[in-house]
Amino acid sequence: MLFTEVFLNLVARQDFAFRWLRDRSLVHGRAAHLMDFNRRELRTNNYRFCSGHQARYTLAQEAHMPDPAHRAGLEGVIVADTRLSEVDGERGRLVIAGSDVEKLAGNVSFEELAHRLWSLYLPESSPDRLQKNLGEARVRAFALIPGLGNALDARDGMDALRAAVAHLQAPDSVWESTVLVTAATAVFTAAWAAKLHGRQPTPPDSSLGHAADLLRMATGDASPVKAKGLEAYLVVVSDHGMNASTFAARVIASTGSDLVSAVVGAIGALKGPLHGGAPGPVLEMLDNIGQPDRAIQWLEAEINAGRRIMGMGHRIYRVRDPRAAVLEQAVMRLERSGIETPRLKLARAVEEAAEGLLRKRHPDRPLNANVEFYAAVLLDALGFPRALFSSLFACGRVVGWCAHVAEQRATGRLIRPESRYIGPRPAPA
Ligand code: COA
Image (cartoon, rainbow, N blue to C red; front, side, top):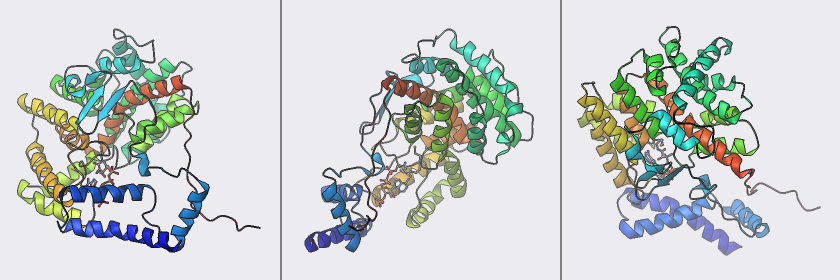
């Protein structure tokens, strides 16, 4: 026992020692990679904070559990088979419903994309009728606004959206629920935006496409170029493997609960800054930096203070998130159409500086721009206030949530993992 205790204490210190060496650039290349891999494996298996009594305790627990392996944050764990999307983190490739994201953005309408995802599990979906279905559902959702109580008074847009969607009564038909919850997410997001600016919510125009109507209701702007920009954004964020909010939705659906409950849970998961809450802070960061030549100094101070750079890094991608490139191109398309994109130049300089600094700090762990980085620049150029960014993410991702809920239902299997108890046990009698 003494030997293992000493060993575990050494391991815990190795983590500290590794960081110390790495931060001073004293360990590089393959050696750094190997050391970091070992450190992560051990950390993942919960040894990181083991010492003294605790270490003994963990070992005692393991004696009762022959297979203790688990992964912190479920990193690398496959929890479902899906036909909806595939994230290849090594190559930086995202496939949604059989197509590369680069082919979808700017070429496929929101309705077409929704149909491609939904029709895999919901045979009622029809490409010809979906625009009409969604338009009519937006009108129905708008009529519900007076019955939402004070939901839309919330100061945070995601709190408002979560509370408003929670008011929906899920229709018996899964298909009707899917269309209603998708339409309502856009209508309630736009209604909260109207309140933010002290105006009455704008009623939907059911003859418009979903993206164009969302833009019009939320900003009062009906520019077709901007509508295309928003549509590209909604398509790009529609689905992304087993991300945290999708997993939350699938867990809820797996219990046999309804779609509205699953979407409400997913909105709660999306709100966090490590998931869909990042684009607002990205814009704040750009504002704080102000000038390209101040980027390095500002970012260095943040990293030294132990804070994360918003819009950088990803659990899966080990190269630049392909969605960042697609959204950057969408911003460039706006620019070419004469729409001002005030933060594009600064964003590029900040991305380059952040990449360089993070590469130095974490030579073993590539940390590049993620989807949120250019989502912030695009949504800002489209005229949306930053307080609305996360809710707009929900307006796109709701399509994926609904598809995953349908897929999960088709498996009929409850998601119920296990935990490993590391607390005290009653003393033997
Ligand atoms: N800025 C600075 N350091 C970062 C970082 C960032 N954006 N992202 C990760 N790191 C560092 C971590 O501090 C950690 O360092 P350590 O080994 O010294 O402890 C190391 O990189 C590995 O990070 P880890 O916590 O294992 O990554 P993860 O897979 O859990 O995190 C994110 C992924 C997205 C949560 C993370 O990159 C992050 O917080 N990014 C900023 C928020 C953001 O943009 N979210 C939107 C995601 S689409």
